[in-house]
Image (cartoon, rainbow, N blue to C red; front, side, top):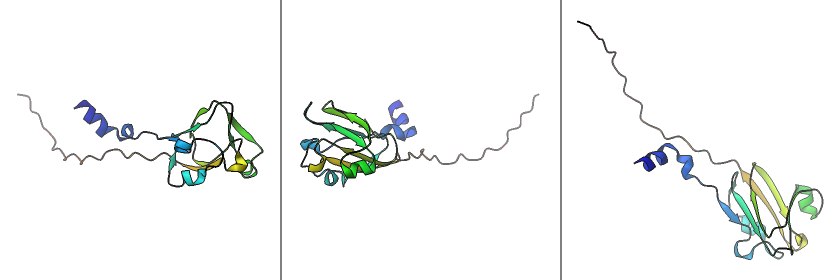
Length: 136
């Protein structure tokens, strides 16, 4: 009963962030069309991207738009663990590329605001008549 009530009263609890492994089974490497991979996905604030690749053989660079298009430039974050997690913290465009950027190792996504959780609607309470008390 308590679990049911908490689920009904807190619909946001049932809404979990998604974890996306970039490239799925192919992972993060050159020669993969990451825009095609991302095309059917909707990314929300709070979702997590996981970049998997061979440690020491690659990197993930989080960049701005012009750097993304040039495959070089201003880098805001560099990751090199081979199993990098990025929580999408803000809505808007996010750009990433790897050491094989010219071979297609690049990804741009649009992050949407978190889905709004509407509170449950309960029927209005019936109006109550005033109560009068008389003391004997």
